[in-house]
Image (cartoon, rainbow, N blue to C red):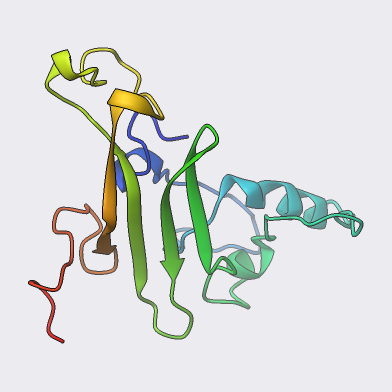
Length: 158
């Protein structure tokens, strides 16, 4: 996933559509961060099976969210990689509803001569195709889902 956008929300947010007659009322909207990793444990539970217990499973079943017995995703952290390189981390702060995101690395889109991915159609995960951020770019996704305004000591009250 990423669709050439690195860890930016515009490249990783994908709507999911679920039909579950008799359980999930038509028009239900669940606005919670989940992951493709959640599909496997969800399907296993719906099929009456059990996920393996001899290994760590990063995904969580979506059944409680779909049935309305839970209101929030079980993912407190979601890590966004480009290949083997960590580019961003999303933190869904429990009991507050606030979602924070830190970008450590972002794609360089232009100018084209810089090795950027703008006209190439694919962004590199390392080297000249990325910009490293130290300190990381920090966003409050609850208030700024388009990641247009990074937070800093200058923009936030102490």
